[in-house]
Length: 253
Image (cartoon, rainbow, N blue to C red; front, side, top):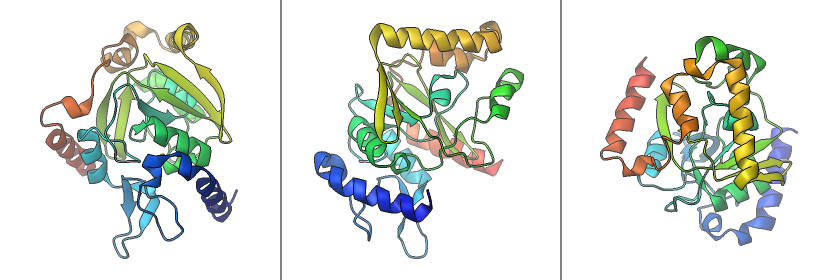
C-alpha cells in the first residue's frame, strides 16, 4: 500500500471510529482532520505535525508525568500498554521501541492505523534473531525498515526505560496481564490467565533453548522474573532529569 493510500484509509477509518474514543477525539487535529498524538514531532519550519516522528522532550515529559504518549491523559496502572510485534513482545531480549499508551489509544491505533502509536516500528530481522545468542545486548532497530503484518499489544505490570542513540527504548515486565494479537485492524487472539502463563513459559523455554538462561544478562532475567513489576518511571524521584541526561549522553556517543 502506498503512503497516499495508507493516509486515505487511515483518515476514513479514523472518521468512522473517533466518536467512540473520547480521549482521542479531544486531541488537536491536523489540516486533514486527523487527531495529533501528544508526543508527535513537528516540522521545525512550518510547525506541522510529523506523524512518523516523536519529540524526545515531549516523550520524556509525558512519561515522567505518568501520561499516555498518544492521548496525553494520566495512566491508570491497570491500563498501561505497549504495542509491539509478537517477537519483540515475547522475546526476552526484545526492546519495545515506542512509548506506552493507554487502552483507549491502543484500541484506536490498532483499529485505525498502528503507526498512529508507533513512530519507527521495525520487526526483528533473521540476523537479529541469530545475533541474540552471540551478543546478548538487547535487540534494537534494524537498518532497513520492515513493516510488520501482525502486532502484539501487551498490558504490563511495570517497565524500565533505556535511552539510546536511536531513541527511547522500553524493557517491559513480561509478566503481562493480557496479550492481544492484531492483524489488519482486527484482534485475532487474546491470551489471559492460565493461557497467558502457558504462552509466556513457552517463549521462556524457547529462549532458554537458544541461549541458556544461566548466561542471560540481569536485565533479561528481570524482564521475565517479575522484578520489574510495579516499576513505573513516573514514581522515580528525579526521573525527568535522569532520563534527559541519559538521552543526551547516548546521543553524544
